[in-house]
Length: 193
Image (cartoon, rainbow, N blue to C red):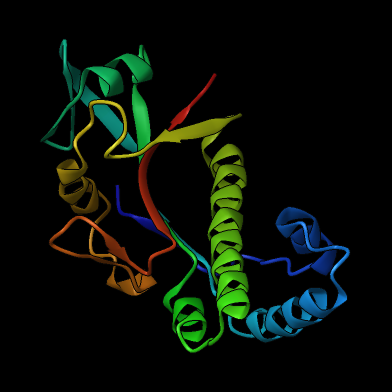
């Protein structure tokens, strides 16, 4: 199956949600700075998702096989249990928002920008969950990340190979297994049934 790109993802920039999350509700100067940054971000943010449905071709004691690629991890194998499909995925806040965040100066404003980038990435994850429920009949999904439990971070390269060229969503996997934009997640999403 060819990867699907979701790039018209709504991003809510409701001030109250952020002030509660950041615990700055009673700090008027901080709220004012945040409000200005949110207004800027609203016109810039373009969170994105790239994913595909993939059949689990084989399961061993400590591995699974997806599209001919072997992923080694007892935890991954056990987590997926009897499931027969997963959704290899890359979710990002978008390079547009990261580029904007990198121009923000000052400790608190920079912190706000990072929180905004993370919120955009989370919005993309939530949008993906709703899309997969609607289009693929998966009532609820969650994910497991390379680099968690006994699933090596280096296997992220295979995950990117499964998803395909992520240039259309502006994501780059670096040689040290980190990603750009920083607020990006690569994962195997799966049904929680």
